[in-house]
Structures are given as structure tokens and as C-alpha cells.
Length: 178
Image (cartoon, rainbow, N blue to C red):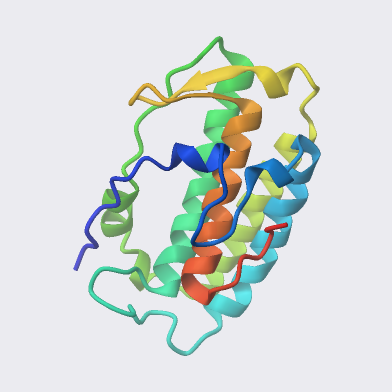
């Protein structure tokens, strides 16, 4: 059964702390992003080892496996967004429907160890891409289809909130938060 889509605009987490997970973008410098990605990725194998990994806590919340698969995929999406921002001028990102992807790719039917391996691989690739940026590249712009504008730096903080928040969603702890 699909989950009701989250249609909130979360861009405010760039400017103020998240009252749920505690993420505060003001605590993150650009150099903190890659270590935060790696740290967060290392927290997911314990989640994926749970005997209840496929169990949804209620009808409106993903299971830990579904959250893990989402985090794995969001890293791929943001790796592509980062590439676009570095290689093109003020790109408009392609749309990504995370809820449709969860259903189409049957997140809750995937093998947990494979999801964990892929999540860590995607994290390593994305973290390395952020580490390779020079200071000017952190300032490059990009846009979502809803008109929200980002720099690489603000996009990285927005993305890091996603990682921290989903870790909090499955455990109540915010790995990678400062």
C-alpha cells in the first residue's frame, strides 16, 4: 500500500532548525557535508539488521527498509543535481517523485543487505564529489521545478537535513547532526 505523499516544502530547514530531528543548518560548514554523509551512511546497517525492518509502524509511515531505500536513492538524485550545478549554468533539476519511486521499485520487497551496500556506495560517491569542489563551485546555483533556488552549499545542507531527518524517522536519533 502506498504512503500518502509528503507535500510540505522543507526548504525552511536551510534557515532554521528542524523541531523534529534537531537538524540546524547553521551548524554545518561546507567542509562538514562529506563527513556527515559518510557518518549517516554508517548508521543504516543497524537499522537494516532489525527483524522488523519491513514493518510499517502505521499505515502512513514507511518501514525502516523503505526509508533506507529512499536514502539510498536520494543520494543518487543529489549526486546528479550536484553534477548539473557544477557543469551547467543555473540548471532546472528534473522532477523526481520519491513516492512513485518507492512503489515502482517495491522498496519494502528489496533485500536489506543489498540496500545497505548500495546506500554506503552512493554515500561514498556523493561525499567524494562534495570533497572535490572548490570554493567557487559551492556558490553555483540550481533550481527545482517549483522555483526553489539553491546554491551548491544550500542544497548540500537541505540534502543533509533529509539524511538526518530520515535517520530520526526510524530511530529517534539524528546521526550526523551536530
